[in-house]
Length: 142
Image 1 (cartoon, rainbow, N blue to C red):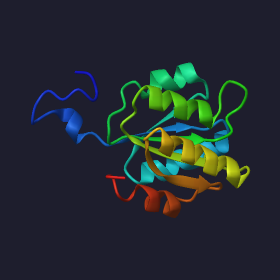
Image 2 (image 1 turned 60 degrees about the vertical axis):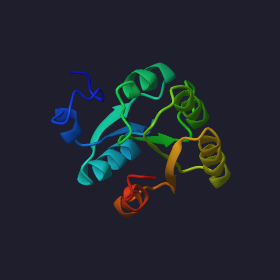
Image 3 (image 1 turned 90 degrees about the vertical axis):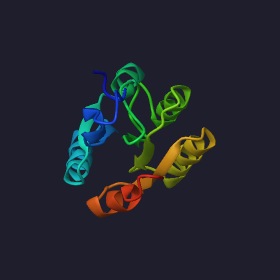
């Protein structure tokens, strides 16, 4: 059975933990965010910061899943590119943007995602803590 394609009321997919797709080029930050999310009950999947890898990674995402995006990812793509790709794919899950750089970049990506009508859970300045992630992701309807 394909993940995210319900087959009925006893669909095992409905019992799976939500997945958090973490798009972060810095290994230490990526590991920290994954550990925080795993402690909150998410399965995590770290995706390489390239649009092709991200598109392939989130292809199986469902509405209860989350994508956590660093704004500054490197030469292959950035948070702006990822937000555009998620909007083009009509990603139904929640989106968290984060950055350790200038706050105006973080706010701009957040505004862009909102304009594309993505489900924005919020924006975080790094370093990320478990309490800030818990606050943002506490309400699955956001």
